[in-house]
Image (cartoon, rainbow, N blue to C red; front, side, top):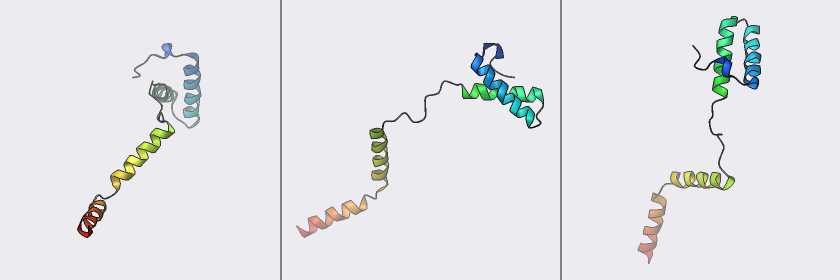
Length: 88
């Protein structure tokens, strides 16, 4: 059973649900099942979720660099420092 009533849909949501419903019916799905799937699809697509890519270019670079530096082995740096101390 759908959580939201179709009566509360905006005109855009109604048009979207109708187009989706027609597509399901063209594929041979029963009209009741097509209506249920269309409502679920509209409800899913119209949730108020933040956009996925909300990072600026600088933030993306910082995140990438942090991942790269975290994946480098620390043993190389320690051994180089240790060699310098031995040679000094």
